[in-house]
Image (cartoon, rainbow over all chains, first blue to last red; front, top):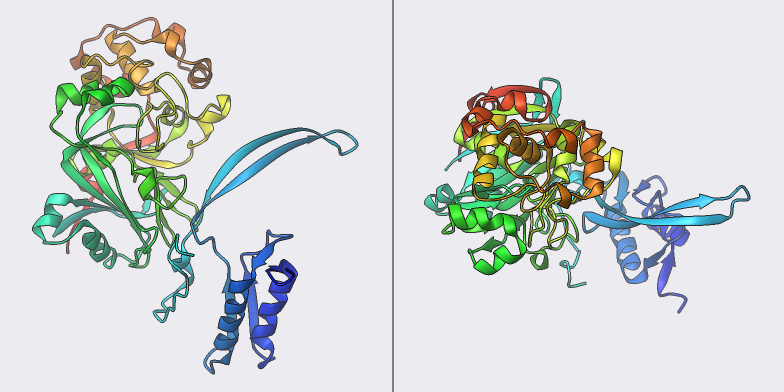
Length: 126
Length: 334
């Protein structure tokens, strides 16, 4: 099942390639994945997003691409692990807490643009 | 359709990070719109991050520490650059009709029964009808309207304002407002809730009168300390708390053990359920100088005296300046 999910480094590489394969002079910046160190990405959407990036690069009026990953639901729930280590670095105590974080929705990325194509399925119908 | 707005901007060095718009259900109906249509239409007029609260003045609600009051937010919205997010930008509150059964789990609602049982009660949304998992919040772009429309933020600048329900109601009724920092005492008080079904902050009954939702000792007073706050003046707060006490509500047992409820009861010489106040609540109250020893020495003042001397007797927000609502609130026509 090698193709089911995409590795984080592969996902990044795929987006750079989709943007620059035909137009090496065009650039892409990727934001929103900075805090991820290891993660698997949904392959079905990876292909569609590669296609969207390539089609954006195909446009003559597009010089560069700003690629932003935002939480789809603008409240994310996180586990916080407070870990106590001994002098050898061994974990000797852990306290778990929860932290719910509020994020802006996608409108912050639009600027004055009104040409917006929404390919996302409705919430709950993915 | 006329509507009112507290505009974003600085007041006395304090940043109010969003517009706060007040719509009235009767005005919306008279204009032949649905509440959602009204929120969208008003949003188009304001490019700044904006909170849009729809009020039904014939309904009723509760403060987080359990005081019943006339007038309620029945729907909340958020907009940014004129847009309302289609998934997360609007949320209705759940309306209850009065039933005796509700009193069994929410003793503070004896006020509802005694004062205005004919009014529908709105606090927070039905959790099964919202798609944001935890917070009772609507978000559009930068604008976040949280805790059932009493805590607004610009999520990009991360500035925030607390605008409790009584402050919002006085803003519309032309009353007196205080604008200041939330400060240590109110920061503690915000956590002294009552347990409610579909509450303003918590969807299910959690923290009962006498308990603290914050449960963080000395840290509780710092949690909201430096957030700007717009509240009703202390005379108005005293009037509503005294009415709750007259209905038989006891701080620490039926209504929250917030500094304001406790100090009002102490000034009157009204009963306080000292033994039902949790140690974790006492730790937070003591951290802002409110002790059992002091509260056990009632002043035995009359209600009129307490209201007249509210500024002197009751704790509140810090570095506060008093305004007439008309000095701060703008009227618009759609």
